[in-house]
Image 1 (cartoon, one colour):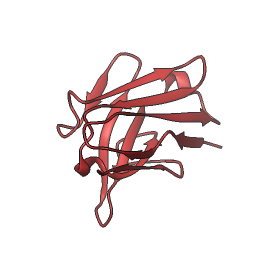
Image 2 (cartoon, one colour; image 1 turned 120 degrees about the vertical axis):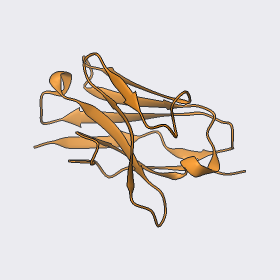
Image 3 (cartoon, rainbow, N blue to C red; image 1 turned 135 degrees about the vertical axis):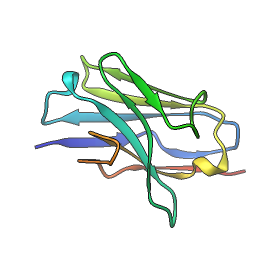
Image 4 (cartoon, one colour; image 1 turned 90 degrees about the vertical axis):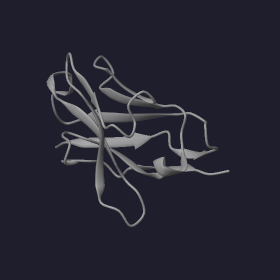
Length: 113
């Protein structure tokens, strides 16, 4: 079955960077669209970014600061997050689509001084 395991979250100061990773198994990763979504405290799930074989898309709130990438040889998805702000504080999930389908347990990102 589909399994997605996120890692790389933590506490970072405003303006800092983090790199999230997601280990995928149980499906054909290389041919699948993959996405990152997040959920801030008390808020709904929010789409962050998606990647296919040739296209990367980003929410306006992260465009220019976040970069999604994938390593098909290692079945791994990444999210490089730069210039982090307090509004980026959330649990981040990798998923198979923008709605968060089959997302993992998530990794906490806290941006605070």
